[in-house]
Figure 1 (cartoon, rainbow, N blue to C red):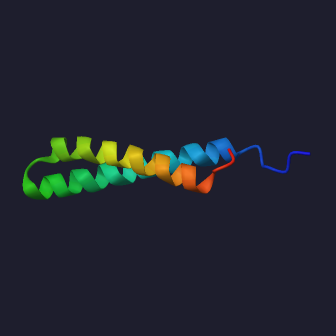
Figure 2 (figure 1 turned 45 degrees about the vertical axis):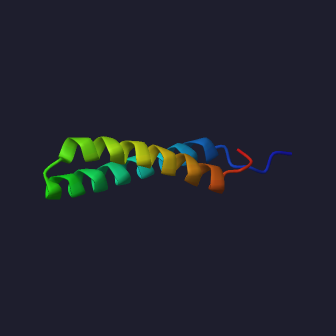
Length: 63
């Protein structure tokens, strides 16, 4: 019998989205301080995507 909750996919997506938005916000904030908000926002998006994938993989190895 399947003991896993049916909402695991939604939780994984939420973790991924939260990591992307958090890193993009950090990149935008740092970019605003140094005068280059858009390039650092884009870098933050990439870093957030990679970090989100790593977090989801670590948390849901059996998904």
